[in-house]
Image (tube, rainbow, N blue to C red; front, side):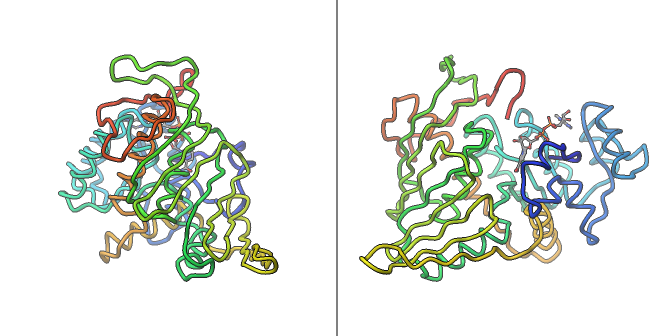
Length: 342
Ligand SMILES: NC(=O)c1ccc[n+]([C@@H]2O[C@H](COP(=O)([O-])OP(=O)(O)OC[C@H]3O[C@@H](n4cnc5c(N)ncnc54)[C@H](O)[C@@H]3O)[C@@H](O)[C@H]2O)c1
């Protein structure tokens, strides 16, 4: 996600998702000047620099050194989750003005609460890689939904169970619920398969596989995350529904027609536009240079992690209702699958 997009990833996503990696998105934007890359693995660092046509001394293995030498305005963080909070802190200490960070933010909710507060106090601009809210199809659907096309929004259903793992896949699902329903979560019920892992002290050492989650918002709206694949999102209101199909390939709007059912259907090809990563970095640039607002707010990023932690807590309690204020800030979810973490 940082630099080298794999062939497998290229084969899995529609063309509209590219450029996907942070570096490809920055290179495609002539308002940016990509000055350096960093990877703790020296071979990966120099392979990245070669691929990007950067000089050899632009490849670093230590973030603090890179930040000291180059003093960049903007940093993209695309490591896996462990240690990511420390990288954000390094960036804030070095006076970086804009940070675009991969999901999920951390292995604990308490870390996220703390670091979001530090970002806020530093006055830095912080963007989060839940990419769909940066993409034309999802933005178009939100305009339609907020504009009253389907009446009053009642329910959002997200079928993004590509890998069905809580920390790997479902930051995206939680973000879509927040995007279409608001960030004010009341309660969560969920069922997960922990693959035999149990909570040892405060550590849940796995990436839970989600069967089902129901998120109730204070507005009365419901959000459902299913274990269905297909990359569809459906927003249903009192007068119809909007379905964003196949990872943003098209939008289908259904409105009330005969027999009082949603029989009036219209398929809209989603608008062309830049990829989610490109748009996220472009909006981060305008935030840094002009103070423009970002499409994802700090409280939404916090709410995202709170939903994930409430899902795990509810599942550990066999699906019991977990209220938003009951989330255990100290619970660590490693997101580990085999040797890999989310
Ligand atoms: N937003 C999306 O749609 C999306 C898609 C795919 C992956 N991701 C996320 O992106 C993240 C990265 O995924 P990936 O597949 O690119 O992982 P990866 O393992 O291929 O790459 C991560 C790299 O970070 C390096 N690294 C680790 N700690 C570091 C440190 N302290 N300083 C510098 N480099 C360090 C590692 O050596 C490795 O090369 C994951 O958290 C994943 O969830 C997001």
